[in-house]
Length: 129
Image (cartoon, rainbow, N blue to C red; front, side, top):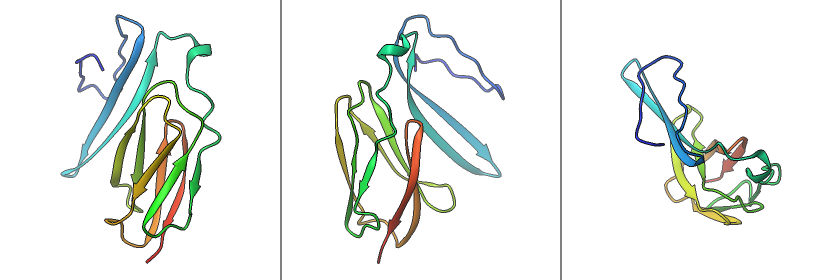
């Protein structure tokens, strides 16, 4: 972002200048916290926004040692988030602009079902034993 923050329940923020901003949201409930981050285009004409995210592919799935996310390039930074079955962030990684593939090692993942999101697209990832 631009360095501003809020403790409001439903905050609203207007950026002074058009551009791409990294925004984050943090929540604390019952002494447990959860955070998420996303790249945001503020004041950028829609025609210059992200390329469609409907073509993200995982390979292999189920995966054992690593998984590859492949996609048409994004013309701005994005964030890959992988959550466990309890909604905890297991892996977070920035995707640089114009990247078309991201390989994630699964050494620290226990076998099970995980959920991923990149921008507005999301899906399931199965990690084998």
